[in-house]
Amino acid sequence: MAGQRFSRRWLLVAAGAAGLVAAGAVPWPAGAVEVEPADLRRRILGAVPPHVGYAESIGRLGLPQIPQLGSAIALFTSTTRIRAFVAGADRWRVAELTPAGERDTYHLDGTQYLWDFGGDQVTRVVGQAPLRLPRAADLLPPTIARRLLGPDAGPVTSLPPRRVAGRTAAGLRLTPSDPATTIGTVDVWADPATALPLRVEVAPRGGPPLLTSELIDVVDRGPDPSELMPTVPPGAASVATSAADVSGAFRQLDAPPAPRRLAGLARAPRSGTPDAQLPGSGIYGSGLARFALVPATQEFAARVVGDATAAGATVVSVPSGQAVRLATPLVSVAAMAAGRSGALLIGPVVPELLDQAVREIAERRRA
Picture 1 (tube, helix red, strand yellow):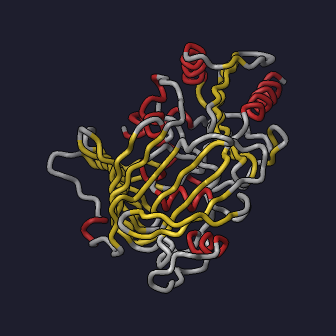
Picture 2 (picture 1 turned 135 degrees about the horizontal axis):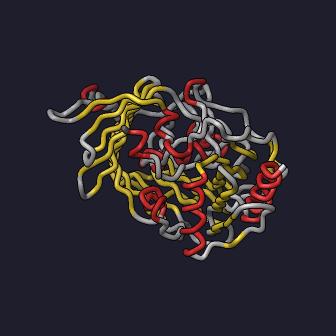
C-alpha cells in the first residue's frame, strides 16, 4: 500500500504555513523594479499567479545521512530539479525530476494525487493531514516565500534588484526578530509585475545561505488542462489512501495527547481535515520560531535515536528512555524513545528549545 511505501520518510515541517490572504495580484508598471518591500510581501502572500516553469533547489543543511530518513534528507542536502505547472493556489502539478524518471504531485481543488514512476502507481490522497511528508513542491521559490514571509515573521527591507530567469526581479529581505529561530535572513526576488517569487535564499544567523531555490525558466501562463490531470499509464496501479495513512509510522492512534505548551511555547490551532488528523502531533510557537512534535512508534524512534547517535548526535538526558538531538545552523532535530512509544521534534529553532521540549515530554510520559 502507498502508506507503507512512505512510512519511513521524514516530515517536512516548514516554519509554519502562511495563510492565503484575500488580496489579489496588483499590476505593476512595466520595467519598474523599485517597490516598497512591505507592499511586495503583501502581494507575494496574495493570489498565486499562473505560471509554468523549471526550478532548481540547492540544500546545504549539513544533516547526516540516517538510513530511515535518507530520501527526505536528500531534499535539503543536494540539488532537486523541479517542473511546476500552476493554475492557482488550489490547482497545480509539480514534478520532481530524478535519474529514474519523475515523482509527481497533483493538487486539484483540495484532492491530491501522487505519481511515482519507480513504483508505477498513482495514489489519490483523501483529506489533508496537519503534518505531511516532504515533497519537491515545498522547495519551489513561490512556496518557500509564501510560507516564510508571514506578517508575524519579522520586518522586511529592500534588496537591490537582480536578474533571475531572464527578468529584472525586485528584492526584499526578511530578518526574523525572534531570537528563538535559527533563521537569520530570508531573501526573496520576485517579478515586480506579478509578484511571483523567482529566487529565495534562506540563511542562518551569521552564515551564508544554506537553502537556495530559483526558477531558472518560467512562462507567465496557466498550464494546459491536460497537464494538470493525472493519468494512469497502461499497467500501472491506481489506489486511494487517506492523508493520515500516508504518514505511516508517524500515525499513532494511541499516542498521548499533544501538550498545550512545550518549552514555553503554545500549541498552534490544529489544521487539516477531521478524517486525517494525526493523534498526539502538534506545532508549537509562532512566526519562524516553530517546531513540530510528531509521535512515532517505539521501534521507529529507537532506530532514529541509534542512527543519530552513530552520526554524532548530542545525547539529551531524560528521566526515562533515550533521547538525542541533532543541530545544524538552520534546522534542529530531536528524537526520543521511551517505553512503548517515541517522539520526533523538528524545526528552525535553537537546539536548547528542543532539549527542553523533549525533557518535558519525557517527564509527562513518566508521570
